[in-house]
View 1 (cartoon, rainbow, N blue to C red):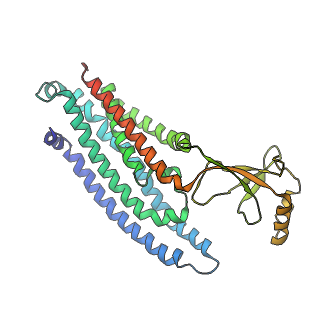
View 2 (tube, one colour):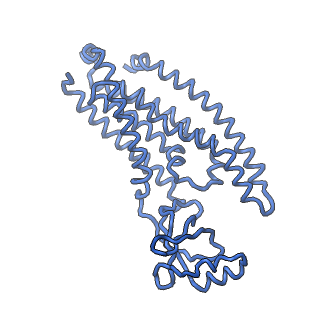
View 3 (spheres, rainbow, N blue to C red):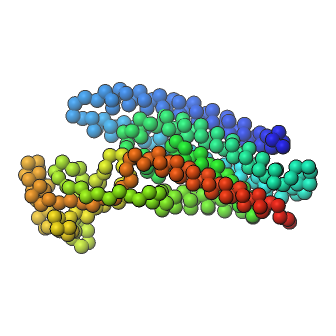
Length: 328
């Protein structure tokens, strides 16, 4: 059965292998270039212009890292569309299921071998790509300091592997229910797009209870300020290094816990740094922030990858139960 599955899938597997070799060569080249630039410019920076050097470094490699990350995020969806959706529908549409499922091999064994074999290939392809991209982009990610952002998190380390296996089995499940390849592909594409939006912004922030903290605003704290429609002062751009800031704006509060709306607020931010420090210190202003600490990154990676694999196991169980019933 495994040999038969390989013969049916070898064209797709060989195509994926050739594409992976090309991607590997490019990522090795890109990673070498990023590391050389990082060691030479960022690590070797001396003087007071290091922040500008880091910005130039990020600007130089932002586009190639972004494109490689988006490609890795798209690959699980493509695996679902072209490997998962036709897996069962191809047999049903051609009528070959009547022959295949009446041999000595049971439907259950046929399905499990098919799903297991292609899922393994999917995990290997995406896993190698993710490993290479994580290695290549690691200096860039270190300087950027935003490991939790939607694109970076989904295209690094182990989460893409769980995502790829889930997308493949999800597509196969849709095909089993719909029994037509093209509608199954369309539904899979829509489902994957929804999942890519819901998980990063609706589920991932709540995998663990966020940390809340009160942060005093001083002249040494980097931030920007503006007034909202209620004349309350809002702080924009405050960031804890390495953490995932769950709120992008923060209301500025006084010592009594009331929203600060002093009309003379701008007077604190003058050209004279000493006056600015004195002005802000007298007011004892602060903001309340909510964030996921940097040390939760790997915990979130394992939780999300494990969640995808758990959903995959449930889908496999459903497919095994469903395929035992008469399909036509």
